[in-house]
Image (cartoon, rainbow, N blue to C red; front, side, top):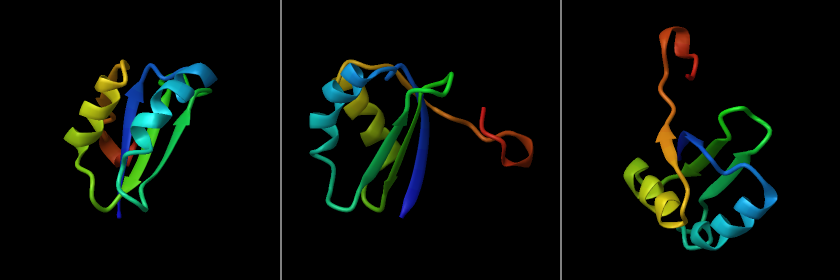
Length: 78
């Protein structure tokens, strides 16, 4: 299983409601969490089947902005 982290503009309960039907189409066993309290609105997805590009396309299809978080020195995400 691979873990993907993204910076998004999914920032409230209404946004989560809007994106949930799109995420419900993900393969069985895929989990996701949107941290709306984090300043970068971090979306974490764990899946053994999805690619980063598939996730990005799904979030954009739902009407949200998304970009992969990059790891810098010492593995810190930015």
